[in-house]
Amino acid sequence: MKRRDFFKSAAVVGLASIFKPEALVAKSANGKLAVHSSPDLVAVMGGEPEVMLVRAMKELGGIGKYVKKGAKVVIKPNIGWDKSQEMAANTNPEIIGALVKMCKSAGASEILVFDHTCQDWKKCYANSGIEAAVNAAGGKMVPGNDESYYQKVSFPTGVNLTEAKIHKAILDCDVWFNVPVLKHHGGAKNSIAMKNLMGIVWDRKFFHSNNLHQCIADAATMAKKPALNIVDAYRIMKTNGPQGKSEADVVTLKSLIISPDFVAVDTASMKLFSQVQPTEMKDVRYIAMAEKLNVGTQNLDSLNVKRIKIN
Image 1: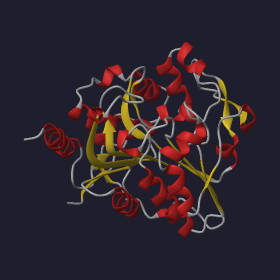
Image 2: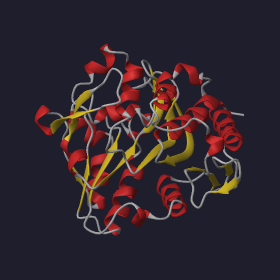
Image 3: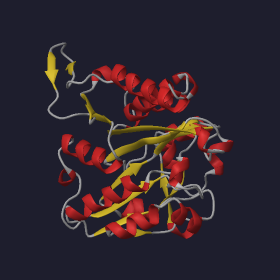
């Protein structure tokens, strides 16, 4: 078996062990069994990006559940690096294009896409393939490279991060979607949904100099949370993140994990990642920190989790 195929097989087995194929039945506060009406988290595997997104959104009740006619929508991918999509440093452009189309079909009045990139924003937008995908689908790319685009907000329950300047596109929209790529990260150990919030703030240096993990958890306490966290695990960067060095760092998993719960979606994504590149949950400290701040839950067994295998 080829090395890439081994990793892919291991990941599929891992997903099967993490997520039960049927909707879960959880215990309510009084100890009685209660069936959830719709999934809290959806995990899809085995399809192309748009196919997986369409199927997941159907399970979640359709895009119209989140985007109303005339709504102003923001989509926040990871577009931090001047890399092609094959390197998995950025969110897969096919997922972003598909999401823009969905929002358009739901009657959104505008669909803005941005990131506060780590490298030249114009090159990142273009070479990631995201700019072309967004334009083709009817959305609009907006920059995040100037402090004038940001407005100060408070994080009342934050421990180290108690205020930050947030991109005005997020503050002014009716609904937004957080769409990270699952990948290794040298400092945070893994970059997933909560880590992707660093792309909506102006001063990222504060995070790195004031306990990165705690600041990531603090950022997730923000009042205006995304409607959904859509984790792109079609290709993942298993080593040398956040940029990667070569295609040897990349494994194709053809997976997608979606939930409104920051902690749950990052927990599930970590479990998937660890099947390919063994990583201890305790090392990705911001997940437990965020749970302590009541951002969400790591207990996936308490949630209604829907697992879908396309082929």
